[in-house]
Amino acid sequence: MIRSHYVFWLVFALMMIGLYVVISHGNLLKKLIGLSMFQVGVFLFFISLGKVDGGSAPIISEGVETYSHPLPQVLILTAIVVGVATLAVGLALAVRVFEAYGTVEEEELLERDQDEATT
Amino acid sequence: MTTFVLINVTLLVILTATALTISRMRALYEATMLTALFSLVTACLFVLLDAVDVAFTEAAVGVGISTVLLLGGLSLTRSRETVTPRRRRLPGAAVAALTGGTLIYAAQDLPGFGAADTPVQSHPITDVYLRQSQEDIGIPNTVTSVLASYRGLDTLGELVVVVTAGVAVLLLLGPLTRPEDAGWRKALDLVDYRVLRVVSGLLMPFILLFALYVLFHGDFGPGGGFQAGVIFATGFVLYGLVFGLDKAQRVLPKAVLWSLIPLGLVLFIGLGVVSMLLGGSFLDYDTLSPGDPAAGQHLGILLVEAAIGITVAAVMTSVFFSFAGRRATR
Image (cartoon, rainbow over all chains, first blue to last red; front, side):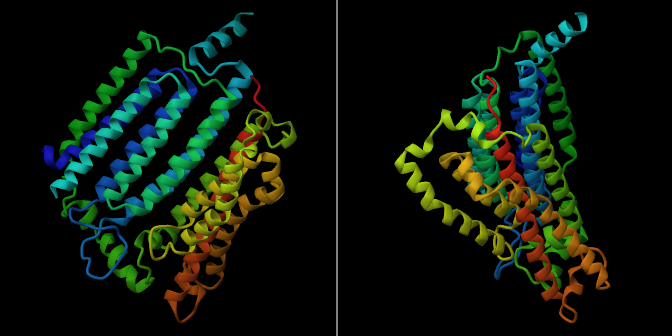
């Protein structure tokens, strides 16, 4: 069990660190960093499912018989680029929030909103 | 085999340790530098897991572009996090522990790592992608043929998402600030450092040449439109960082950059429409060269990769420009 599943367990640990940062930390930028860590965990999980023992990169060449599966790699390759594009959107939103509120901390943002609601 | 396991575990442990350190750090500039390291280790892991194309992308995107974007975001906001109060830590830890436990429990049903008889490997599509693709398309790099041909529609969808994200950033951060007003240039005049100026000037043509190589060599080795687009963008980001935004925008005017964003997408869809007009289905490149389907596939894949490269490069560069061009309001 350990030998066949250790990669998955470590990858899950990675995802959970990301999830913890997203939920617990109040700073919007830190949340985004946590989100990208979670994302990397998912990427690694996908890629590890396509890996075969003794396989080689799926570039067909002479003398190589076993290849890892190309499909997860294609999906993740595009997902990485989409990931950075969405990270850019998140950062842009955080910048606009900062300009409007003067803070990127969740608690202070909520306080600011509450103050506005009461006055 | 045992060395493989050893390296794999070592890299994964380094990765987890880096993630833990990042989660504990309150200084966000330092955390950003660690995320670059995090991406680099991930790229090594991808190579180990036979995903060379993915490793290439992760190295270019994670270490290059996303670090620069995070730094840009930090320079416009605050770079220090407040202390996370204890009452906030508990729920997060509880949710993470619960989800992690569930995942590990569910992972018992997963086939073993690296086994050859998993559903992923034994599905008939594996044979299509690895063996039949050599007759259908004749491109050694199966990742490229799956990306651009077999699952071209998927890739088109991803490209639409990238364009949408790019447009969203432009709308949020506004292309309205003029480069002269940008607060950046006064803050860091990198162009005054002669070594930096000369070296980055020397590097520019090689970076762009390398991007072209990656774009057109994607059929035979790791590479392709996504990687090439990101490397192109890195070249312009370097230029913008060193020589200042106004000079970079004189080299690459905004109007040109913005028209390049939809151009790649239009090219991609246009190719699909052309293949339909020639009697095939959407994005069926066989029809591009009647009588010799493989040649049509080659042409189609090359055009699609070029289209992807154009759009990705334009989106990444204009996203960087809009972060850098925004005046710091602090």
